[in-house]
Image (cartoon, rainbow, N blue to C red):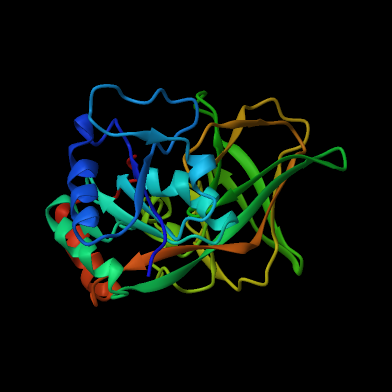
Length: 293
């Protein structure tokens, strides 16, 4: 029996919180305790919607599940908080594609299955991303999808050296490189020509972006590898690091970006028996890839 479910609607996707209200009604009908929280910090609670909005960081203590209403971006944002507390996330897609979301807004009656325990938990590998400068760590983050190291706004080729603890993997000259998890293989990595990997697998996908070489292939590596991306020394070209599409971090000449498998996993709730292949084909027929919020 679920003790507390947190409903996390993205107000930019769920106008007037209509979908969250309907989900709350379904859960209330079956006696499933729930509370509504906003996913983003410093976000003013919407007024006049007829819902009590509680602080997420307060309510997450003692919660058994988070239901995220939005696109994949909303799930990505919540994944860090949920992973640190080992709380599974159920996605309700209000974006374009929503690869990680389990339900569409028309499927809300399926939420009744939660109280009956008719669901499964799927574990997804996450990435620890850090930046070392002059021998010390100056940045660290947790990623579900990917770490992107790319050129700034100036259209210049950047040069990156990529290593594992076993030695050099490849030199990349182009727009940058993506180091993705299997979950992130259907996001930006796919657009850059990377392979599709089953999201519950345990691998790294290294995908060069617009590389100036016909030999710049994508690589699928063991999760035991530690991947290091070295920026070009004595270069003044702007290079940026973005984790899961978040705010860019400015890199300097000679910085090292290290990506390793995290001890944390994101746990996603599955209510259906649909296979990954079935979901992939359906989403691809809808056209393109998306990381929308």
